[in-house]
Image 1 (cartoon, rainbow, N blue to C red):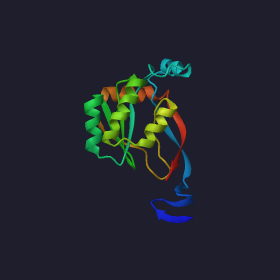
Image 2: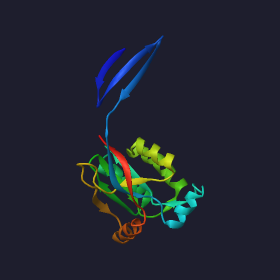
Image 3: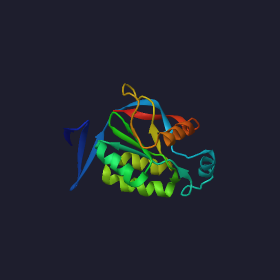
Image 4: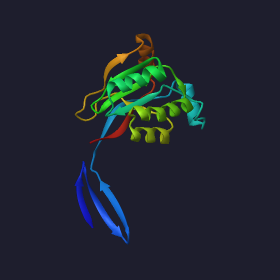
Length: 174
């Protein structure tokens, strides 16, 4: 067995014949926080529950950890039109203010990888069939701060619509 200290976890490597198996163990604190789900309205949420995934409408949500503001904002201008950019402790959240089908959202998420979309966020969102973005604080990290909104009217409509889709969810605080 070989032990290597790297990053935020310890890597354990085991030799099995000519193969090398690596295992990294992390310890993270579980926290609960407020978030928005991406469903456009109650009707679309009900259709989702009945198995109609691809044509259900969502507000497009994106989580860009470690990306540059200019890349996130450029992606929003190029692909979303009306949008909002929020600053988080790890990067930026991008919210499209015009709903689109889940099929369109997932296509855009793959395009957003070129701009720094968090791959873990992509995997979790596709597995769930909808997106969630943090709105509340996360442990000692403050809640996301609104930096840019391209339409105050669309932003107010979005915020008003989210009162029905505000959820408490479990996440980790690294």
